Image (cartoon, rainbow over all chains, first blue to last red; front, side, top):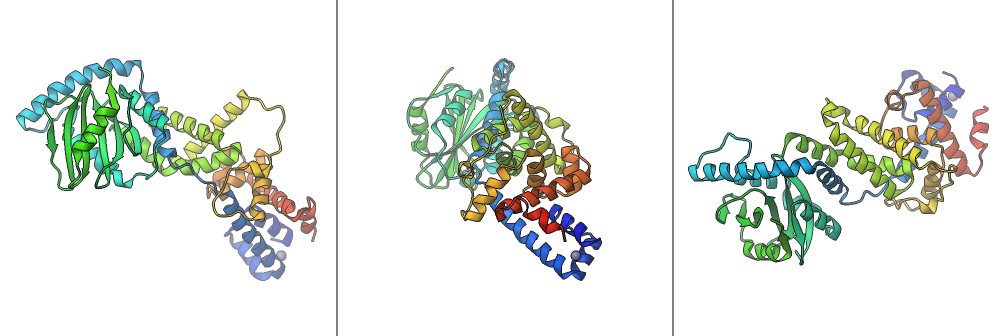
Length: 233
Length: 170
Ligand SMILES: [Zn+2]
């Protein structure tokens, strides 16, 4: 490798590790200096290329995808699932056995979701109003009041129908609210978990789970959601 | 949550920021870049089953993003390749020095042929062979473009378009 080739290579691949390249750099002071200059220049270049990434980028992508996945076919399917879910849940909960069926029991689904995306780990930034409206609309809800500070809002799926996850602010910290249209339960009940304090309550079009830290005042959050969201049946 | 959904969300969390950085420099516009990334992931979702190996995900997404960018670019055919004012470029991290601003301006004004390999190498951490594969070029062609891209950038910074080529005449 001669000096000209070295310069070309150095500009094409500043961190080249080929033996010929390294040997030339070791033996030729002029090229070693040149290479050092290029490496420093490249470091500045990398720094200059850094771009601030919008905070909610990932949740916005997931929201858009979930809205796309929602279609006319899904609406038809959803009715069927809602019916199947209510029957299976009634059976499963009353009988006290775990169902080996398409739909996991509500509790298991709620705990799984919250373990996966715990409220305390999501960005502590306010969700834009438009996003919130869109998330609720996907679930058949209209925002008609204030939910207080909402730091996370996204759509996820239990089997094939969309559910929503919101993270609101409670007395003790973040409170997860899972909105589950089509998942019907008979009565309100506590959600058993060592880490969390939670309830599952019926809503006009399904159910919702509210889960906070131990000692959280869940009734307040429930009232806040009930007065701020109107469900279409 | 279904397995496909879980897999998709994992990809979004792991790679959307990288893709966004790449898109910003490809589009030279933040909001256009976000649209492009959104569209890329939407397409990725629809053909997620074709992605066999998670390790190949980033390259796969970049390929989708480039294709989508080319499609959008075709749709709104620009009258001419415009000159980008460095002040219009996206706000960046900590580096607000004059040198960084000049570099950003110079990168934005590189032609796409030169800009892309440089971004893939510098932001994406890809080797020349990998870049060649992603762009459908020979690795020799990639080397030439990378060499010329840096030559141009250095010349712009030195305030002398001919500086780099002179320097090579040793
Ligand atoms: Zn030399």
